[in-house]
Length: 188
Image 1 (cartoon, helix red, strand yellow):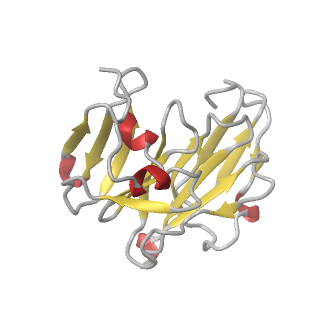
Image 2 (image 1 turned 120 degrees about the horizontal axis):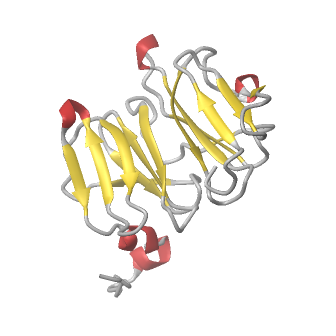
Image 3 (image 1 turned 180 degrees about the horizontal axis):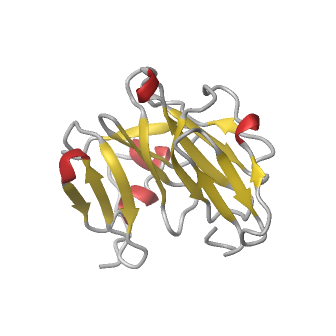
């Protein structure tokens, strides 16, 4: 967790989600509480949120079982309960491969799928596809450089795409998107 180094979230390739809040002395298995995804499905990513110590996101990738539905779940209570947060993602052709939370706005997340990149400004309640001249490809990794806010995407076949300073994307809201024009605060 970015808020507490003793909080560690772990996901495995056989669908196991584990949590420790004491730096690894004891672990709690959480997968049984995640409903709506087949038992044993590959955990593609876990993101410990900066919103609170008990908040995290987990994504699953079922393509090895022939499933291409998106699976992203959110917890705010250390994994006691999980809520699916996939509205706006394509229903049957977008296995989620990567997730990242914007460093200074915990409600802004990016999700990389088999074919596109998506962003949410409301902690996963609704996702929007980022076109931005991006290739239709699998997005295997997403990193947001903490100091410069550069969005770095690792694509399938080892391609790298970098958007210098993604802060305008993080600042954007549905209300701003409806404006005729908007001046974004870009620090550099």
